[in-house]
Length: 623
Ligand SMILES: [Zn+2]
Image (cartoon, helix red, strand yellow):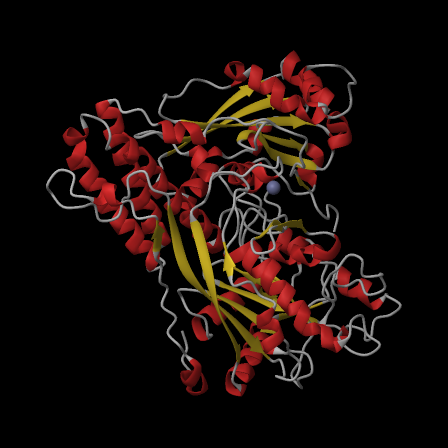
């Protein structure tokens, strides 16, 4: 962190504090076995972990008259409580996440000296190149207020993130958005941001180098809790910000020079737009997000592993799907993300695809109009779910009972055999009853591989959904109780994809980033502590509770460590200790044969209705 003279006046050390709001369970806290009350665990109680989350909005190159800071801050939420999203599509509440964030905002204008240094750094670190296809398209618009002139600077996005994280304003225990505006200065250069350091592990395809649609205006989350957003970059493809002749029903932010009289948007709307980006992208999609599925559903039992089993189905005689998946790579990325589990990735190959799986693909793709198990759900889209649920053992070998096994059914097929579903890379399906995750499906073909896509990154992405993660372009706004995706009034939310995560569509990162880790670890920390409390509530009423009390004391110590680590934003340590606490409590319950009705109730299925489904498709396949 850089501490400048001006900012010393405004620098308030934002302590990340968390408190436990609990209905004090007086009976549970009493000294049960004469060795003092428990420190952290609350048998039978539900505890909400609260955390103050500093969010700094730092303006670089913006004139203070361009932004109405007060109005911007007033548009932001005071709190965020994550929910499990998928059950909401059925009108159901998922498991209570037990988390509440309170935001503490600051709006800061960078000093003149820093601003000069920063733009000089951009000019130095970038390299000259031709206009991108989308800068060209912008120039060809009828209403554009200027023409982008080359050569333009290509600037490595992670390098800029690192620069800001090292030299900038942000607090390590909090998030920072840098709003950058180079335009209007004498040293201004037209520019785009790139990320070219990760290629597709199966095809070697470098989306960052080869695609005009991957030349960006924002980035963050590679190595820091920083995200920058530069409306003086581009114009770009990903948020359609090159498009200025449209009627604005798809709401995106134009380049900064279009905020003027006669431009795409009035200057007075800039404040509101940056507020929208802060709220619906920064907060809702990057910093404090909601999981698509409950991560704890994928928790292995005590001593068990998390298993990914890929059932490869070879539906193309001309190619071999097995050569386009790297199970070691998959395991490495998942272990990096959740190192507190033991991971296994297995694969079995059905070559050629058997009749049942083939018929299922044909129905799913619309190539075969036939009745089957999908009729019970009203759409052929359910065929994959119902067929593989009924025939699981045929494709997936037995693992140990204490392991959690997630299945990925992988069709190595052709464009023709994908029929109506061509363009679909995969989806992490639910149980069609209450929004609990079930099997994962993915698709690859020579046609997809020609576009750059192997199986491996799709598998990591889809399994990422399966263990909880949402896309960084669709999500939930807590205070407005609003589910949204990047279309209509929220088209600008595509800019969330310009961040480090395999969960984006822009294909510039093969693994999980800083924002993913923060969110997943916090969800699981709060979740494991509440699971521990739930099981412990059943243990304390058991006649043999005394026998396992030493183990409960250990679990309580681990839980205390977890909360302490959570409070100082060491989320990895927090989740590892919370998982340990839960493992010890669960082991104690097993040892004395205590049943766990509280947990069992949380796992009971509920009646279903028709729902919206999230599928993962190729975006901008050809440019
Ligand atoms: Zn997806």
